[in-house]
Image (cartoon, rainbow, N blue to C red; front, side, top):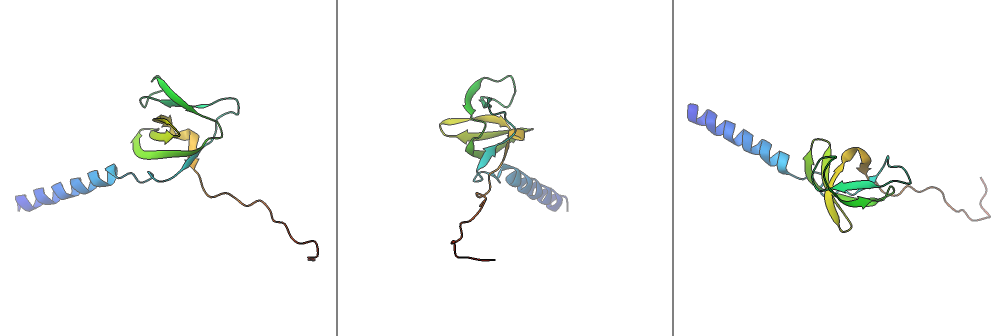
Length: 110
């Protein structure tokens, strides 16, 4: 009895670890939000506001690729030639472009 409980506990712990390690958003492109037009989003060496800045992302940056690693409010990303940690408050999932209008032929009436 004890052996089967231990085995079940082990399998449950293994399932939790596997789920936590899976990069759920690794293939999701993100874009920068909440950064002033005259500022940049700092990419840091470690998940800390005091860590060395290894690169920057422009305030309108797109194509930010998370790799799935997270520590608190920090996510590890790559953008162009830079890899490092950013505060996830400044990025959102980048959806498809929104169509803003259409051209209709001049002879169409409502």
